[in-house]
Length: 193
Image (cartoon, rainbow, N blue to C red):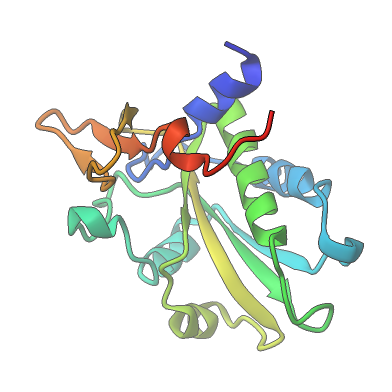
């Protein structure tokens, strides 16, 4: 298996963390620096970031997020919450559309985090107005995604699903998080070779 494939497999959505494990501001800056180097539509580079490794600010961000809807779960309990967050913003004074820039940046950050032994989750279910008020985020910035980061406190396993199987993730009795993935044959509609 190639190193890159190993990194992709290691980069699972993690929702429970060793909260006391500190993620440094320098680490967050390094991760954003990786995203800074990625492609951007028309090279506009409209993404901006808010970084938090402060327990007080992390608590404010946490209360604006929804976690793992399939599990009907309110999110990690105190002690298992993320140690850091990166909020990805779109600067509307640079562009009115952020296309795939956000996804490219977010995945790059998460792969960089996995390489450093960190886990995380891209969260799109955000109370944006509440987060904007609580962190005093200027109106010019569209809140695109929140990335939670920290040292994983859970095991996440990829399951191979069969066509028609349920793709909802689940946890077993031991707390192992299972994530079904569609087969390659189910994903490819046509091939020309």
